[in-house]
Length: 322
Image (cartoon, rainbow, N blue to C red; front, side, top):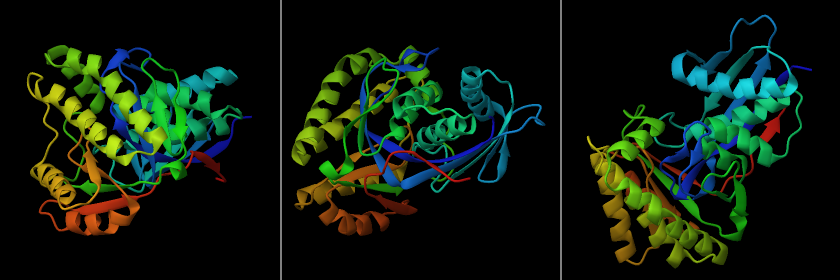
C-alpha cells in the first residue's frame, strides 16, 4: 500500500498576522490569522516510500538537506506512518518556484504539499481539513495553504478553513523581493524570542484578535477601504513586538522601507494599495488588479528591489500524477 504521491501547494501571505504559539508542543497559534493564497508562489513535492531506505531523505531543488529541515519532514511523515501502521522510510523531493526560507512562506506551501503527497503515497484518503491539521503540526501557516482564496486559522485551531474564494474579492498581491538568501532568524525562533523578551508581546496577543475580526469582516464585505488599513496595522503591530525584543528582531532591509514609502506615496496620488510584511525583508502589497501593473513597474525601479512577483489568488492544494 506504500507508494508514491505528488502534490502542489501554494504559498499564502497573512493579511491578519499570527506571531507566537499558544502551545509550542502541539504547534497551536496564540492569535487568529487570515491569509490570501497566491497562485504565483508554488511548491511541488513528491514522496516515495521505499523499503530499502534506512532513514528519510530530503532534497530541495535537487540539493540534499539534513538537520532541522529533515527532522521536521520526518516528524510529519511519522504521523502519516502511524496512521497506517508502518515504519517505511521515504524519499522526499521538493521544488519551490520562489525564494526559500526568506520570508515568502515557503514552509507554508512546502509542508502543505508534503502533507498532501505523503497521505496519497500512504494510501490515505483524507478531507482537506484533516490534511490541514497534519500540515499545521509542522508549520502553522501551512494549515492555510491547503485552501485557496482567503483562509483563516483560529487561535489554538487544529486546522484552517476557507473564508471566501479568491473570485469573491479579486485582489492581487505584488511581492517586492529585496535581500536574497535565507533570513538570519527563523520564524519559530523569532516567535519564542519575542514572547520571552518583548514587553509588547502581551499587548500584541491581546489586540490581534480584534484586528483579525476587522480583516475578516472586510474580506466578507469585499471592502478594500476597510481591509487595507487593517492589513497594514496588523503587520506593523507584529513587527513592533519584535522590535521591542532584547535584542531586537529587525527583519527590515533598506529596500523594505523604500517599498513601504512608495506604496504610501502611491496612495496619496490616488492609487489603492496597502503593504504587509512577514518575518523577512520582502514587502507584499495588496492592490486592485487595475492598478497592479503600474505599481509593479514603480516598485521594480526602487534601489534594492531585485524583482517583483505578481500574483492573483491561488487554488486549493492538489494531487498530481507522479
